[in-house]
Length: 152
Image: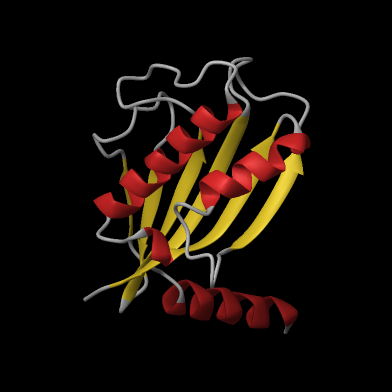
């Protein structure tokens, strides 16, 4: 009986929640190696955009703001904005940000940059984690984002 219930539950969930998605690599940000910059999921009247962790790379793959937290944060938010806009959204569509900082004492600088990009009256949900290292030494932060964009 449990096996039958599990099979029916899986069938219902796979039918009810099966959505189409597209993996995206907009030309406005660096071309990644081995992953996609974003996954766009069709939700019917809207679409969800799950953005890979962004670091301070420009569209040509060059590091921006070497040893400068504020410049790196600015580039990261420019990348997020470019990816969101490539799917027809705006930064007001960002519903979640996850921050990975190598030094949490930079939180004030991070908030100053973030506040130039998000709706400060109704900011997105967020998580901030201090990490000991990122995948390359020159990066001081990495930010993931999720947006829900209404289809017009």
